[in-house]
Image (cartoon, rainbow, N blue to C red; front, side, top):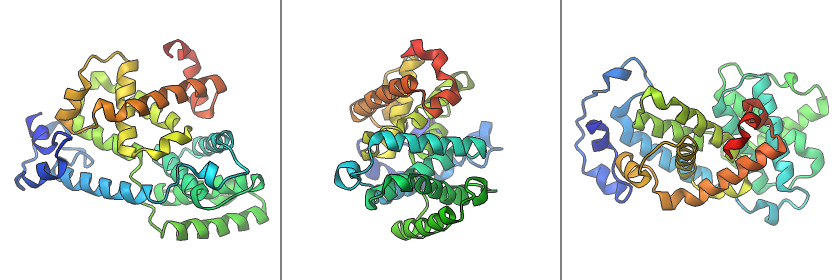
Length: 287
């Protein structure tokens, strides 16, 4: 693991750490040479690209849009829209990346445009329509989830508004993308595969909490790893682990971890779609 540690700096002086590293780097991860996604040679460039994109993505979000703009909506209505998005993703066998992209676009639109309850269906369907066209190889045609001509016209209009709003910048450094980045670096043994599974689940649940969108996706991804490690009783010194692999330290993600656990409990109690899909009701005693 020494070659990874040389590429990933402790979290305290990221820019100087990267600038001081030599450019020459021989790929030694023979275990993953067959996997084109495990390209640790470009880990520095990937990090800087994700960091830049994350800043761009967050510039489109207003974490206080319910109090500032959406007088006709509330967080429960947003959670219901996320439930419907999950149903669409499940029925159309969409990728997890598409799900998170859809929620991001939903929050971007709600951060800028005041909507009424009658528009809810059209809004989340439009966000899914855009995300699936961008992320999926075979996106679901619009007629698969709406047959109303008026609603189709409204979806096309909202699509134009939303794409103009983000200036057609659909690349998203979501918490899901960050988690995959961190997992590539960590390269944990197969015996801890449940750690990744639980972390991904917590990311899916976390999007239901509107208070989480004010945090950087990179911190949310680290918080999911930290929280799932606690749930699985993985013994580690988190700050030492974070320093070794360039993750966020415990004091940076503790509050997010608490929000994730609260959201998980609420989601189980309210039987959200994501929880029903993962059958977490059977594991209620964990929480």
